[in-house]
Length: 156
Image (cartoon, rainbow, N blue to C red; front, side, top):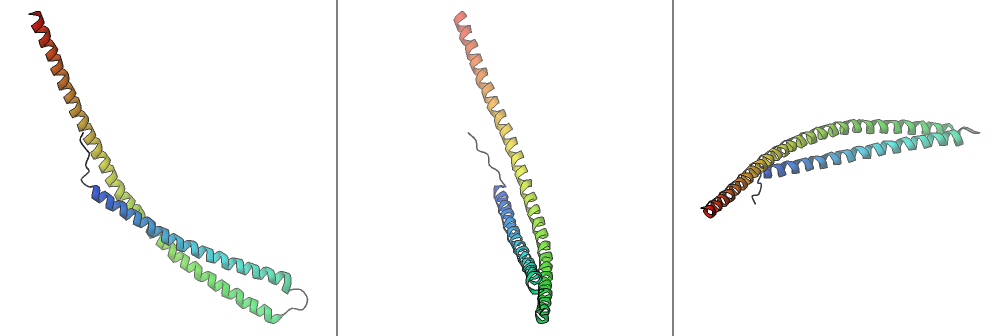
């Protein structure tokens, strides 16, 4: 039986490899974004814990002004750190968007070749079916002719 051969199979494999590479690149960038989000949550949790400690333990009895000043400086430092993380996240968000765009383009290019392969296979399959049908018709004609020839020699 005939075998289907897609002449652009190497190109299709290469485009699949490019798509996989784009997926890996996107995953790396998304991992960076996830790490930044976790760091931001950690900073937020630290600030909330410090504020809770201040409210529950430090505002009772004699108030330590040095501690309050230190707490204020700590809060400002954490706020600056959070802003820095947010800026990094904005930059990484742009990278994620670019990586998604590159992945979409790579997927589109691969899909085009897959559709072409599918169409070529369908045409090849239809041609093969036509040839097989023609062969079957030829065999049927020969058998029919042989049967008619046999009947003609028996009668005569």
